Image (cartoon, rainbow, N blue to C red; front, side, top):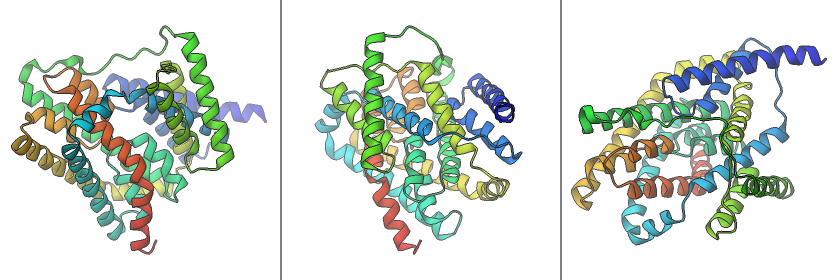
Length: 350
């Protein structure tokens, strides 16, 4: 029994490494999740079943929750509070625009209602993909929509930055990736305890996407109170992303792949429309709030926050404004995602 399992796991691992290496080579975002997901899709289509246990998937969700908690600096909340009307209006406008586009896609039956809404959510791609399944959406199609948007938004952000800054736009805007680096072992041990606590509490309370959400709450409290600085080595994040990518990719079928391929032109149109709408919001920030154009564009860019952060750090922009806007939208999307999905699904009779 072990030999057939090994025969399927081995090509899955090899394909995952190849896809990740190719994506890292061309600087595609979310390579550590997308590579394993594509590998899983190929094995699923070839009917080479590999099972990722629910426990592994739950622990991977908890690691992602800790990662999100670590990525949200306390200073962001101060920046948002200092100019909250501007932030709230801009963040809500982007979320509203994405919800309208999701509703239109559902109305046109591009994807089922709940799936279209989760897939159209602007930002928090990994979190939205994890949460979507708990609320009745097709996680495979949500992942397809979310990561297609992430790649397009990242590409457009790089192009806009290069055009704006001209030939001086730095090529080092993509961070170098090191899988094994120095680890602070005591904070790492504390981080593992937080992850374990989040996972075990989630198993007791049966909250949708509980391992991620509960660990996110625990991690944010611990980080912001100064009790512990979470330590997440790149290899742990890479392994967690791979588990999530495999668990999604291995659920694909030939029918689902064909369905997604037929919907590709309309999904692309939806993504480009959202990018154009966000450009309109950036224009309003320039005209009425005095924000410089590149800062405004990166701040309103709908998703790919990690890529936007890297680009912003290598450009002449107001980095704190960009990250406050991106983080604020990320948090609001996490909070409002389930409610918006249920509301639209009911209106469509789904």
